[in-house]
Image 1 (cartoon, rainbow, N blue to C red):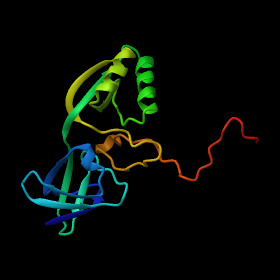
Image 2 (image 1 turned 45 degrees about the vertical axis):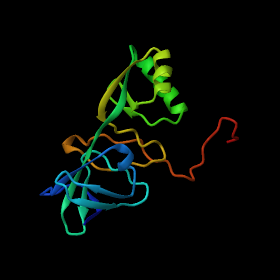
Image 3 (image 1 turned 180 degrees about the vertical axis):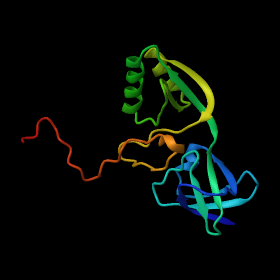
Image 4 (image 1 turned 180 degrees about the horizontal axis):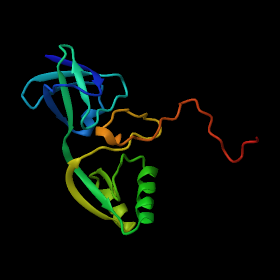
Amino acid sequence: MLTLHTRINQADQIAGDLTLPYELREKSRLCATLASGEDVAIFTARGTVLRDGDLLRGDDGRVVRIVAAAEATYRVDCPTPRDLLRCAFHLGNRHTQAQVGDGFLRIRQDRVLKEMLEGLGATVTAEDAPFEPESGAYGGGHGHHHGDDGGHHPLAPIPLRQRIHRPTDKA
C-alpha cells in the first residue's frame, strides 16, 4: 500500500488523484482509495487540513493530487453585503464551519441553520459542491499556492499564547 506523508508545492508528474470530502481531508491518519483503485494510507502532521489541489508525496516518491469531493452543501446568498455579513456573524456565533466565496457563503446542509439564515433574509440553495471552509484564526494557514496569482490564503494564525487586549485592561 502506498503511504502518503509529505505535502509538496509542485511536481513534474502526478501519479493519481485522491477525491475526499472535507470531513476526511481534516484527518491526519486515513486509509483511502485513489481514482485508479489503488489503496493508500495518509499520515500527515496532526492538525493538517488537505485542500483541493494539494500534492502529497509517498514513500516510493510518487505524487498524488488531492481533489475536494462534491458534498451536500447550502449556498447562502443575500441581497446586500451587510446581510451576508450578518449571516456570517450568526454562523460564526454557532461555531459553524463556513466557506467564504465571492459574494456568498457555503455551509454543510443543516435544516436548523437553513431556517435561521432564511429568517435573516438569505436565499439558501442546496447544492452538491466541494466544501472548502475557512481554517479560522487558530487553524493556521496551509501555505500552498494555486498558480501565479498566489491563490486563497486562510486567516493568519494567532499564536495560542498571544495576549488579547481588552478595553478594560490598563495600559
